[in-house]
Image (cartoon, rainbow, N blue to C red):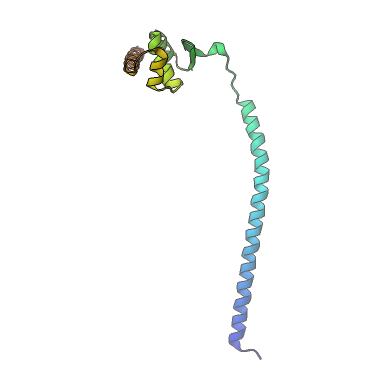
Length: 142
């Protein structure tokens, strides 16, 4: 007859083996379910994105956009007040703002393009800021 302590050890070993098998199988099932879900979601997400793109697309026409030009450069403006403020600026101030903020040129590059010094570019930008600020203050007060 087996020793009672051997029987308890054997039961513990069997229970331990059973628990490990259950956990391993559950993990495999979860991994398989996740892989299947990812396959389906990839297809669903692509088709849903296509539907969102086609259904929520807003047509824009060039005649509906506010385009500001200076020299050979142009920019689309989405704010009417900013558009009017930029139109009221002299062309060299408008060009400095466009090249700086829309085209990300450095002051030295802008100065070379305009045939001026970087300090002149700085002064033109500051005058343009002041004129735009004044336009916005007038627009907000009325």
